[in-house]
Image 1: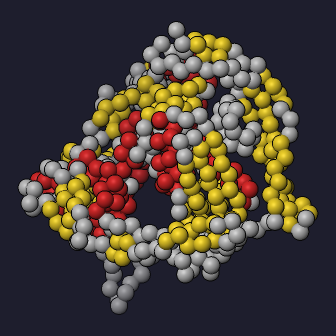
Image 2: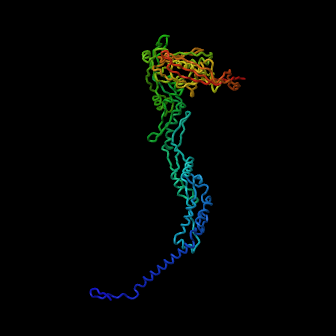
Image 3: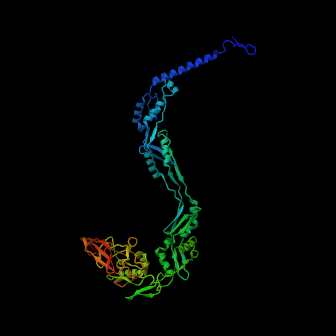
Length: 581
C-alpha cells in the first residue's frame, strides 16, 4: 500500500534500480575472500621460514628457519663485519678495528628482521608467484664501553692542540712560530655514528664528527710582530746609562731568555720582559753592580766583651726589576747604537744595619765562632778568600733564611773564582771554585754552635780528615745548598775572614741557649776502600780511607741543664785508592 503526502501519490521506482549496488558488494566480498585465502595459503606454504632469496650483505639465508638463519649468520659474522672499518675524520682517512671497538652483528635480531620482512600480506601472496625475499640489512650492535675506548685511543693520534701564532726568542735570535688550527674527534658523536651505521653498507668511509679550533693569533699578526719588534729587538745590544754612574750593556742573548710576545686583549702580540730574570743573568748582575752603589751595612766587630761598630753604613742606589724591564723594552724596537741607548731609573736604598739600630736588632754578643784550617794552595786561598769576602757582613733578620749559594753566587771566573780540586761523583776532579767546601763547613759549624736550625745541608760523599766527623758540609751550584734559619729571635750578623791556610766564621747576635754541646758517636757500618786507576785524561790521585756511618748529637742547654737534643747522622762512602799512570 502506498502512502500519500498532501494527497499526492509518489512515483513508483523503476524496475532494476538497486541491482548494480548488489553486484558491486558481492564482487568486493568475493575479492576479500580470495585475498584472505591467498594469504592463508602463502603463510601455510612459508611457515616461519625466511623467504627464499633473502640475503644479508650477500649472504643467502633464504628458505631457512629463523633458528637456522641465526646460526648461519653467527658462523659468517666475519663476512658480515669487516676486520677494519674505513672511517674519515674531517679530511683525514683512517681505519678502526671492529673487534677492538666492540662492533658485532646481532644474529638473532637480523634473522627476526629477515623473517618479518616477508610477513606482509602482499609479500606473503607474492611468495606464491615469485621466489625473492630481497636484501636485508644486518642489525649492528656496538659495545659502548669498548667503542668509547677505541675512539678515545683513535683521538689520541688524531687530536691536535691549536697552536697560536707567536714569536720565540733564543740565543739572541727571534723566530716566527706560525699558527696552526686545532682539531678534536667528537667521541660521543662518533660513538653515535657507529651505533647508527652498518659497516659494509657501502664503499664510502664512515664520516666521524670532529671539532675544529682556529688560532686567535694569525700569520699576519706574526709577520707584523716580527718586522715591527722581534727582529729589531735582537739586532744588537742595548746600553743603559745610570745617572751619576756608569753604563750597562746588555747583549741580545741575555735578553732573549726572558723576552716573550703574548697576545693582548685585542689579540695583538705584545712584548713582555721578565726584569727579575734578566737581573739574575750573571753578566747583567755584574754590570749593574759596577754601575750602581750598593747600600753598605754597618760593619760590626767583637772585641771579646761587646759588639762594636767598626764603620757606619751608607745608602746606595739600586735598579729594580720593573725599572730594568721598562728601560730595556723602550730601546728594543730601535735600530742603531745611538737609538738603542737610554737612561734607566734608580732608587735610593738604605742599609739594613746601622750602628744606631744594631742594638735594637738584638746584635749584642758573639753567639759562636769556628775556624777551619786547610793545606795552603794558590787556588784554595783564592777561592776560600773570595767566598769569605762575599759572606762577610751578611745580616739575617729574625725568621729569615740564609743561603750559601744565594750569598756567594755561582763559582765562576766572572765572580772571582779559579779552577781547583773538588769532589765530584765520589772522586777528586778539577773544577772552578774548588776548595769552597772549607767555607761551607766553617759556616755549618758556626750555625751548629749558634743553635740555629738547618733547612738544607749535605756532607761530602767520603770523609775528609781535616773536618769534624759528621759535622761538615759541602755545596754545589744548582744542586746542593747550605741553608740555616734564624730562629734565635734576634738578628744575626755574620763575620767572615780568611788567611792563606784558614777561614773563620763568627755569628753575632743574642744567644737563645746558654750552651751548645756536640757529642760524636763511634764509627759504625765500616766499609773498606778499593783501588782503581784514574781516568787518563784528567786524573787526580786519592789515598784510601774507609767508609762509615757516624751520628753527632747537638745538645741544647740553658740554666745548666739539657733542654733539647738533635741528632745528625752521616754516611760516608769508602774513598778508593786512585793511582795515575
